[in-house]
Length: 118
Image 1 (tube, rainbow, N blue to C red):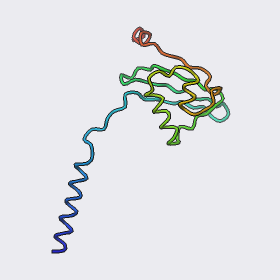
Image 2 (spheres, rainbow, N blue to C red):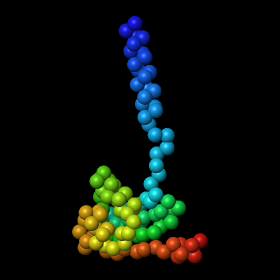
Image 3 (cartoon, helix red, strand yellow):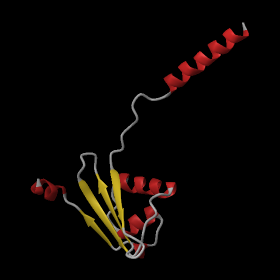
C-alpha cells in the first residue's frame, strides 16, 4: 500500500510539472551580437538586429571591452535591443550602466538602405 501511494504521488507530480511548462516560449523580437577585440587592442562593437534579421543599430566602443559573459550585462543588452528609441550615446550608456565617454559612435542603419543592398 505504501509503495502504491508513493508511485501515485510521483506520477501526479510528473503530470503537474508537464502541464505547468509552456509549450512555446515567446521569441524575442530583437537580438544583439557583440564583437570584442583582444586586450592589446580593446574595442567592442554591438550590433542590434530586428526579428527579420535586419541590422538597425551599430554601437562602437574604442578602447573598452564590454564584459558580455556576466548575467547582468546580458540582461542590459537584452533591454537595449528591445528598447524603442535608443539612438544616442547617453541613452545607450545609461541602459548599459557605463560612462557616456565609452561609447565612441552610434550608427543607425536605415531600412531603406538595407532594401537597396539586397
